[in-house]
Length: 226
Image (tube, rainbow, N blue to C red; front, side, top):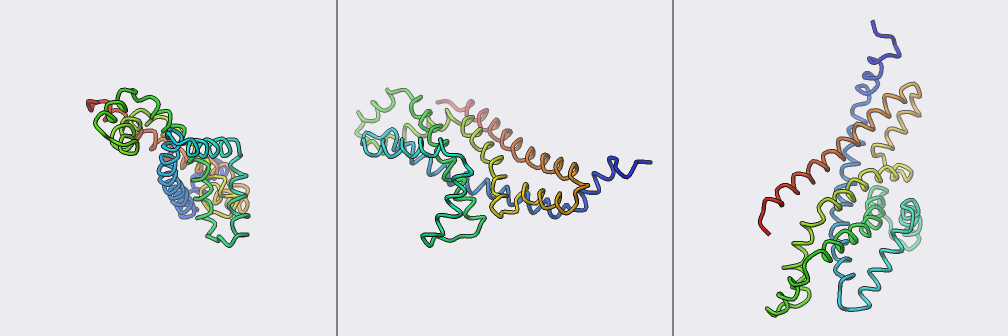
């Protein structure tokens, strides 16, 4: 007969709050997806600025990366949540969290993509120019497709960090996994172990699923002739 504080009570604590965990899981998933897509798009644009032959574009891209990468994510959240409303830019806390996560991780996506661009053989760009392609055309048609193949793993690492960093949104009113876990442990302190273990499992599901997807993409692309 299991004791009231044994394994069965841990399972019951999770099952009794399964709907709450599901809502937190979905919010964390959506935060991650929206911010990842936006950061990938903006980071790719920023990377093209950093390798541009136009000096002001390179300087602007480098300034963004250096400022953001050396600023704590919590400070970025504070800026987005408390400063933007001062200039009449008002969203829901969820949207503010997406914006903050995007602003922060765009810098890391940029550096990953830039490394991929620099890893492409210079002869590729020279051949494209010899064919009459402009710099933007060379990037879009020749360089970036090869660059992305080279940086799937680094981009996956950025995505994994993004998933974990969604937990900061809990401090700013977003009821994602960490937020709902805090609420449950406050309401039922005796369930703290079960709640934290369930939260860890949920984060592992997300990060390990991403890692599996990255590995699958790497294997598929490795089988495609360059």
